[in-house]
Length: 230
Ligand SMILES: *[C@@H]1O[C@H](CO)[C@@H](O)[C@H](O)[C@H]1NC(C)=O
Ligand SMILES: *[C@@H]1O[C@H](CO)[C@@H](O)[C@H](O)[C@H]1NC(C)=O
Image (cartoon, rainbow, N blue to C red; front, side, top):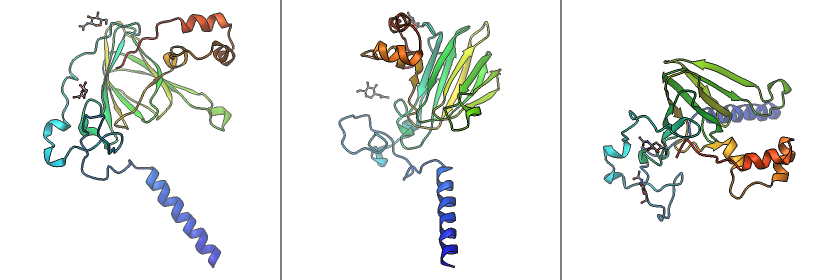
């Protein structure tokens, strides 16, 4: 009897915690509009809350995503983010947005968002997109590539934390909008993080890691690793 109760209790705990993990975190209050002051001392999600009596509609407003981003860079793409750093009303709400512009054959290079799943909708052009799975226990799923060619109106999702990319395979510009499941998704661009860190990662480390000649590593570390998002 006692054992049955314990088993039942464990089953309940497992059920409740799986339900908890399946939902967004609670914002704890209606909203917590961020104050743009890094010297303030009490933080929620990295920001302090503006006095709710002082909050206005403008705290939940951002304008300008109708404007194309400047794609004149080596990658031929530009991410225009609308995270808590641009729209303070997003603080604690677990969501953000970005516009992604692509010149013909422009690339949003392999990168990850350590804190967010991303869902994109293409509104113009043709994008070849994909993501790669991690190193799970099942060897058949290790580093598996999933890709798709997207046309206007098509939607694709990149699971949280996985390396992904978007490549404009068309002769004209392309535009996509992305929703992200964090107010501050973060971005790690693989090439610039590995080969463009300051100071550089030891060439011995990268030579061994990538199993190539040290000259190849020196060459890669000598490139200018520009960014397509600020
Ligand atoms: C776009 O960026 C390039 C390179 O930084 C710059 O020379 C150019 O003036 C920018 N164009 C616009 C319209 O801002
Ligand atoms: C936040 O404050 C910084 C420093 O004063 C300023 O550069 C930035 O533009 C401000 N951000 C917004 C969205 O007002």
